[in-house]
Image 1 (spheres, protein in one colour):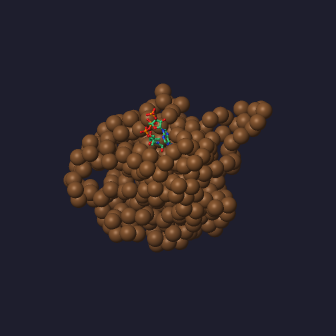
Image 2: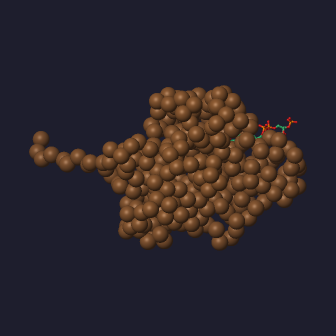
Image 3: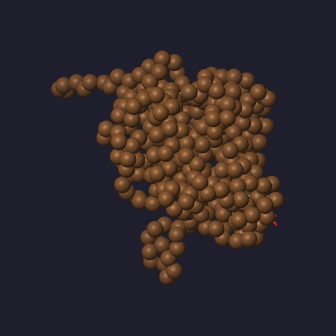
Length: 334
Ligand code: UT7
């Protein structure tokens, strides 16, 4: 054996230094979408907790919403954009298979040629990104990582599909992960169940689209009820495992930020985890809808803005969706 490789030296710990979000501007109430799916405002509110959802206007793109959220996150982290040396974008609605939208976001932000790549873990994407960023900072491959969760799911939504038309939404959330003296991001608990790959997916792949007689967008389709049952039962167990691995109990939590998929899933998880009264629970879904990879940072950033989550608070994040893929971790609110 000749030569020896130098080992990268990372930070002792990683933490979230700042958050930012961007909400798509069009507010679409249930009344506006019910006729096309033979539904009612009452049914949608009862079954999902959604009253209105945010859809993007023409000029609000995956890239522009990401840049809007990122500028706020970088400012709140108190760093200069040139200090961002890696950008991880979690999304399923960037319409180019390649190149990654992360590179275009980096360019528009004016960073100094950082590593930039996209990841695909659907609704669990942001928590996957935070876990990667934490490991990158501690492993020495980056000092400051910008993690973005962004979706423009209105592009992938069939407004005539009863199972999905009322659910999905648009927006972006971002976090800057950087070095710290104390741990600010706990161990991730993540996994997947590919046996249930078909429960949420695009209706067809792009090759089927182009050979079809009447080509149409490969919209998202979902078998809602099995996903609902899986999420309500299995994810409460994952939440508990996350607390155990972090070495804390539900009593130590200040904030609970589950993926904003359905208000009934949020309530069911809080019940099975026996969350104490003092834990404040994110309920952003009511007027945002389900923004997939953007849902957790949008929800947490709103709680910070409204004073429901305060600096130093411990927040449990848990995200789940297509794949089925999931990821959870406890973070300290910056
Ligand atoms: O973000 C990724 C992860 N996604 C999730 O976690 C979503 C999980 N799933 C859900 O949130 C729920 O399954 C939905 C909100 C999508 C649906 O609620 P549900 O309680 O599972 O309803 P269901 O699909 O079992 O349907 C119940 C009834 C059916 O009628 P019958 O058979 O009981 O007569 C449906 O035909 O509701 C009917 N239905 C509707 N009625 C009015 C289904 N969709 C609609 C609709 N409007 N849009």
